[in-house]
Amino acid sequence: EIVLTQSPGTLSLSPGERATLSCRASQSVSSTYLAWYQQKPGQAPRLLIFGASSRATGTPDRFSGSGSWTDFTLTISRLEPEDFAVYYCQQYGSSPSITFGQGTRLEIK
Amino acid sequence: EVQLLESGGGLVQPGGSLRLSCVVSGFTFSNYAMSWVRQAPGKGLEWVSGISGSGGSTYYADSVKGRFSISRDNSKKTLYLLMNSLRAEDTAVYYCAKEDYVELYGLWYYWGRGTLVTVSS
Image (cartoon, rainbow over all chains, first blue to last red; front, top):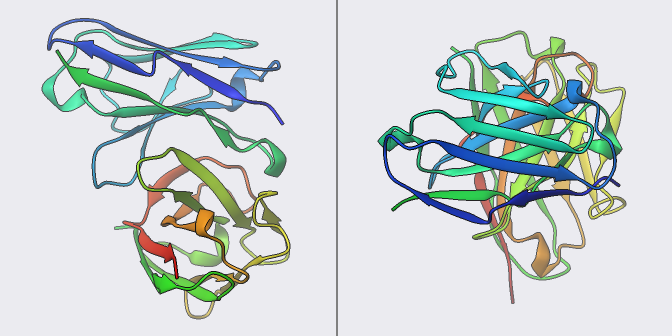
C-alpha cells in the first residue's frame, strides 16, 4: 500500500500570503490519480484538484496543484479568509490504492 | 441538485451491528459507483468500501474486510453499509460519496453530511 505523507502538519499564515502544502508518496503515484480535498469544521470534504493539477468545477484559480512521481504540491497563491481549513491529498484509481494523507491544517496566524 | 442523505448511525456496543443508509436524489443512481468514507473524531479520512453502479462489484478496505458489507438498491436510490463485529476503532462519522463513473475510481465530487457511529460499552 502506498502511504501519503503530508507536510507540514500545521501551517500558520496570514490572509494574502502564499501557502505551499506538500504531499509525498512512499512509492511512485501516477499524477493522473492524485487529488486534493479541502475540509472545514463540521463539513464534508470538498474536491479541489484532481489529476494532480486539474481544478475541479468551482475551485478558484488561486488554487493550483503540481508534481509527479512521489512529490506533489498544493499552492494557494493568495490566501482568502475562507481558505483556512484542513487539506488532504489522496491517491485514487482502484480499490487497493484509495488512500489519503493525514492532512495539513492551515490556520490563521 | 445532487443530494445524499445518510442515516442509521448511533451508539452500539463492541461486537454489535449497525446498518447505515444513504438515500440519494438528483441523478440516475444506477449510473454511478458509490463509496463510504469515514473519519474518526479529530482524525483524517479513510476510504471504507465502494460498489459499482450495478452493484455487481464491491470493494473493501483491509480494516473492514470480512466485517462490513456494502450493497445498494437502485430502485430505491439507496446505498447501504452493514457493519458487523464493530470495534471501538470503527467509531467515526461515515460519509457516503458519489463517483463520477459507473465503476469504482475513488474520486468524489459529491458527499453527504455524514452520520456518526459510536462503538462503546
